[in-house]
Amino acid sequence: MTAEDGQTAAPDPGRRIERSQPGRARRYAFRIARLACSVTGVRDDVALDIAQRGLDRPTEIAELVGLWELERRLASACAAKLGADPSSCSLAQLRLHPVCVEARAVAAVIAALRPDPVVAATEATHEALAAGCAWLDVKAAADDLL
Image 1 (tube, one colour):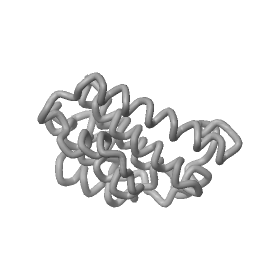
Image 2 (spheres, helix red, strand yellow):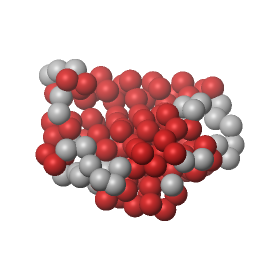
Image 3 (cartoon, rainbow, N blue to C red):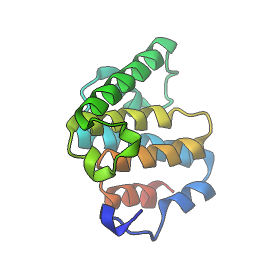
């Protein structure tokens, strides 16, 4: 986190994620995924449903495939808007294009599903920040759940 991104380095939710209990890390990952979907205006029913329910109901293979395909389509559209690979662009450049931030929000939902809860929470946080979530909102979720 840098001052350029409008974020501060302390206190770092990442450290709390690493020390948290698996159940708390998982709940945090899905809360962050919901935040990213809300901030970016994701309208895909599957992405919203998975982010909302978390692991309350197993995610079907068809839902996962659809989510991955959606993220891939959005990332491709983002690359076309940027004229470059999104991974080589700054957060400020990504945030100029709604399709780019929506791709990162869907990636946050995918990240929340990772098998390891700490990895899920860490990656969902990274994607949510890339999607334009405010550092203070991410920190507030960490304060509440971790």
